[in-house]
Amino acid sequence: MHRWMKAAVPVLAVALAFSACSTGEDDAAPAATTPPPDTSPAVTTTAASSATTVLPSETTAPPPTTAPPESTSTTAPEADTTDAAGDAGADTADADADASPPPGAGAGDSFYPWLGNSGYDVIHYDLVLEVDPDANTIDGITTVYAVSTGELETIYLDLSGLKVATVTVDGAAAEFLRERAELIVQPATPVPAGVGFTVEIAYSGVPERIDDPGVPFTRIGWFNQHGVIFTANEPSGSMSWFPSNNHPTDKATFTIVITVPEHLTAASTGVLVEESAADGRRTFTWQMNDPMATYLAAVYIGEFERHTQATRDGLIIRDYIPSSLTDEQRQATLEALSVTPGAIDFFEELLGPYPFDAYGTLVLPFSIGFAMENQTLSLHGDRTLIPLIIAHELAHQWFGNAVSPGDWSEIWLNEGFAHYLAFLYLADYGGHDIAALMANELQAARGANAVPPGSVTVEQLFDFPSVYQRSTLTLHALHRHVGDDTFLEILREHYQRSAGGSATTPDFMAIVAQHGGPDAVALLASWLYSPEIPSTLDGPPASSGK
Ligand code: ARG
Ligand code: ZN
Image (cartoon, rainbow, N blue to C red):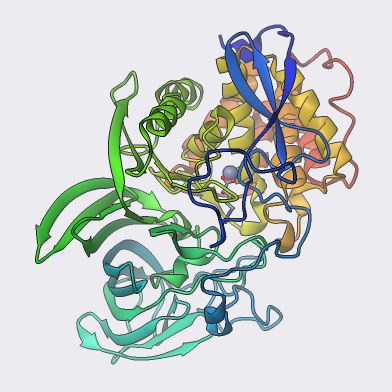
């Protein structure tokens, strides 16, 4: 029995100035220790007993989590100052969106027709990256281990910018050309249907982040800011630093080998299986043993110290925090991160075992306007380390990472689930009534005229009122309608059916239909698709609900 299943606890809302939520751009102030002036977005903090929890404030509130402060605007709030000059050559995720890709050069995504490819399934990626952080260059070799699903005269991969030196297919030199963000490979002889094959790509250059129409608040991919390299790819940005089948419907295991100057640490997604030093350089090998979508692969390079914690069941949590912190900052950071083991225990009880070999958080010594659930090692700036956002990125490990979106237009399956589960955790952790927390979200979503999360446009991919708040309310309405037991059955079944792969809204609907019947489906449909925000949550729960 969790506290969110019990009666209301009075909630005392206390306004607290919070975070600049800077846009993650290169002019972000490093390691700021005081809140910025009141032009910054405010997040309402709710204190109950001794626990501090954070809620979004009302209509003018910024996202408390990952969406940008300007999430309702489509204009870029701040310009890049460091590498804007490099923009000219950058690819756009949907440049010339009207043109449809040739067969093979897309995965059929409704927002991003050119992302991903078809004709093969990737099983494993080997990424070998030599990085010069001062020059911001990478020297890379990517080996793609794949299985053909049809005969391949042409193999399409997604890669934006960078210079490709050579490509081989099964060890034989292959012709290749570049067009848009496609690396088009012509094997010497076609790859027959139904065989395993490898493509090896040697490439180098300065990775240029991508202008993605779904992320108007920053360019995405490989960031190099204030002496730290980190990646935040969602949805299209991984093709700015390695060639791949860049769509979450084709997940694969990864080995990521990163070589950096000796004094630096390179962290990544997975488990650290080897570390060695030679010739003034240090090499870190990271192994991801579970399928991972390309957008969740991460590289982090800088001066970090590693701290470990463990869950009740012995799962290792390794956090990377900046070496530059003062004693006081280090203590505060570790204290903030100390909620992680309990949050994992909570989600394991709710959903089943944590999906991967390890977890942790990498904390940057400056703020960015979002956090990101990179698989097994979430990314945070120095202003998002609050229980709601820590729990949100953690919940994505189940929903988003283990179960990935089958189409980017169904992003609510990621953000609605992560946000609602984070609120359930917060209710449990802070002793709050989930209904009171949701009343606040409802007011905010209404105030912002949240559009239906099931029919957002690509520009609304991370629209906070819709994709986060209204999606959260969607799940809460379903929860209230079917009751605790059925709601948990639905969540668990959705997770178990698709963990390791991807899922769509119809997949989820089918489970809701099976466990909740037609009324539950109708309720879900109204929350996902009706222009108006339904009134279902306005009164007391219907008699069938809890
Ligand atoms: N998935 C992130 C979250 O936890 C949002 C990331 C948006 N930012 C980006 N650079 N794609 O909500
Ligand atoms: Zn999220």
